[in-house]
Length: 563
Image: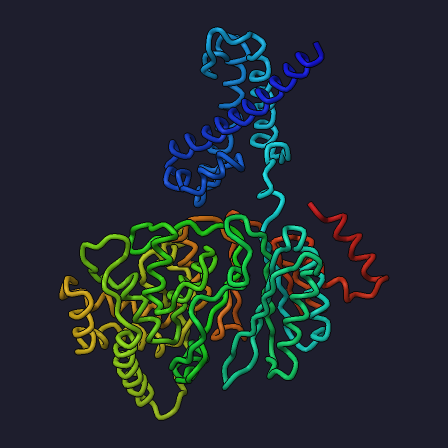
């Protein structure tokens, strides 16, 4: 008797759990159907959403407008509620929907009906009222995540406390997962900057916050530190899709550091820039998933992009982690001041090059020396044009009238305001603008360009030269870290909590971007620092250096003002 009751109870419980999960998957498909209806089908049908639907019981639709997102969200609770009403009105209907056999005992419908009712209630609470229901997210992927954190020290004030702040930030971020972690900063090197990265894999009985902070501290002993603002960008990782390895630990770098001939300085006027040899290296901290990227109007999945990056950069894939590929794409996009990077960008993405009928981006790829040869030719023309502009006036006393110049690269055209005038995106002197506008025509027809295209893209139309040169010039003048990140986010598929820094920009620029991931930023003007993190609580880490009596008042303020 007892065995029979126990057996029935286990059967009922198992039936409830299975049907609860099935109804949850059906609920997520209502979101997908709504996404298809409002024109977001490609995003909703991404491969990553299959895993989310079956395991995480959620759907992420990137790039949806506010109105589209509202339709997609409300479709979930409306569909689940309507289905619950329909099924609960008749046990026979429930048996039909579940595909049960006619001879199945009637009591088997009860757990299925109850499970559907619970899913409908969860749907109303989450989709209609915006409440998070933890029972609908039972997998560990929702309990453990990767996490970004970092701090920017604006001046000399509080520099001696930076490692104390970082240690606290890691401690807070560790609650998202603490299998490994790392921090990157920059030091002075040969007139430019060089990245210093500290990465560690946590042990069974070690503390990640202590390990990673101590390691970055060691890099600063006896180092030639930056006098101005300093960036410390970090990340802790919980491996959800791959093994925990040192190579898979953030911050990620695809292309090893290398010196290039680059133009640096104040780009608002001709006298502001000068040619220098600088170390170039880029680092990325990424929280989320990088699923695919659009190249020349076609979207390719991660595996194809990784293979393409290895050939395009001339650097082997450092690890299979998707975030490393983000760093690789950013290596191709951050071009400002470098003719080498600008020429490569135009060939790979926006220069109108016909790569022939090839699949999966497997077209012939120029070697680094081939890109460099064309870059030297373009740089020579640029320097000649720069000298001509300077020679118009014996001094650099140019007209300081400033006006807007915008990138012509496709997809980056400026928006217009209600009057139809271009919104100003950046300002340069008339002479700098004149030089920039004259450069595509000056470069077009260069013998080195014709030879390059004949060798590597023979199917490219003869009149493509100007488009290629226009894309090259746009990349050279415009694609700093911010513009490069904007370009990436517009064409990347996945979710991103992204922090990007580069040795050419770390003294003045650091980019944080987010889509589908949380990123919080806190400003401490009187303390001369800025903190950011995937965990909002981590941004309060600078409070550890505030005297106790002031800290209590600040914590009370945060408590009262937290949403």
